[in-house]
Length: 546
Image 1 (cartoon, rainbow, N blue to C red):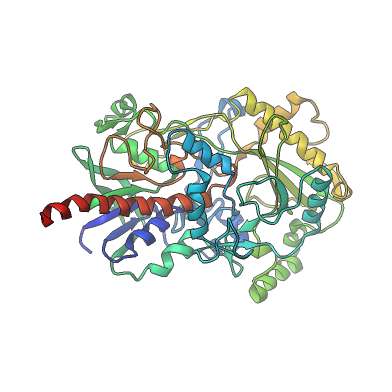
Image 2: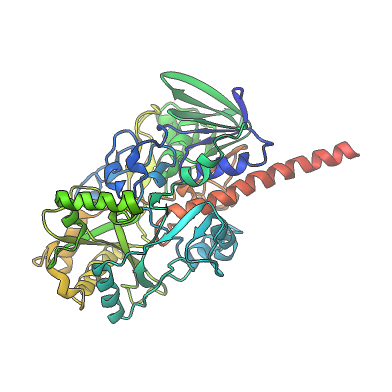
């Protein structure tokens, strides 16, 4: 390939790998995928429990920290982000969740035609290979696996039964659009190995002559001719290179780096750009604003029996046993990852649909991905599904290699604070319900001394952390919305030849984990690109025929 291609895709993550596959499928278009990180050869990427090994890895993880958050006692929160082929889908917790019907219907109601649940469902079905079999909402022939956890764990079984006594039904499928229930999560795994978007979409098509994949290629700026995106400047191996695009540049760098790259390229709030000496291509005040994330609040319990993953990891015999289970049968804890049990419930009686998500893990540690505790432990992680708090992502300087300022503003609304306290109370209620109560020896964190609402809220501020779902920083919406950045076909307002396809375009967070919704959005976006190309060619064909 030359230094000019039809389509440049920046970021080989949950969206970028999908876009590269679909745009190169016909063979009619040349496509270049730029990824700042290395190939996904690190072995722990592909072993589901390796999530703990990649959480702080300096090569395959950007390892960001937020600015000090005044709502979180001035703490800087660690934000891991994938930096390899597959992006964050190569280092995430593997949980397969779409969200609720109402999430997508709200997107359409906010001025984004074609984004209702009914519009998105065919693409959810297209992308998935679900081991539950075909159904009205399930697909079985897609590239991305949705795999059920087959092994039953006594702690998860006790959680399911306890929740049942509180009126929460057991479910096998959280992805029908109606989430309320408790059960085992499905995971993005295939035969006991992680099924990232690189595994599902990119590696099977790497041999296509019209697809070029560049790793170690850090995008520095989108290049413009007037207000048309015409290429990308990037650094690779110490050299600065330029790649030109005949048709479009597609940013799939994620909710932190896509807005940073837009701002570096002159698309964003004019005042911010001028302060950093960047020429304004398009004044878009919403670039980097509207940042949303799910705040994870983790309750930790010591159990009465040595049946946790802590126990297996602490002994040599346990570790050998886990390794043999995976090597011989592609099973056991190594094939499952961290969180097995899921629960979607309403902790606010006024909520019409589930407002809180549980991630239940049969292990415990001081933080996600950290060393396990020296006791038999389990973790109840709770998060508010639709937070009202909003933050931002903004340049610190014009240096493309300096991380941006990231301010989540967690718990900055009264409603979010009230929901956090209610979620902790509900988690305690579940833990105190039999048969789960009989397996709980003591509450390690926050501890029985934390009782009042003010004490619980302080605990949430002191220990709350990301559950890795930053979104919304290049929101989709009509041009009349002063904070919208892309239209309903994900084209950046006011410029040509530039789209954004990743979590940043979500107007509001989906009710759950974000990986699968982004894959769905990329499937749709690839169709938009090809449809728009056909629409451009049609008038030319008519003129030629005349």
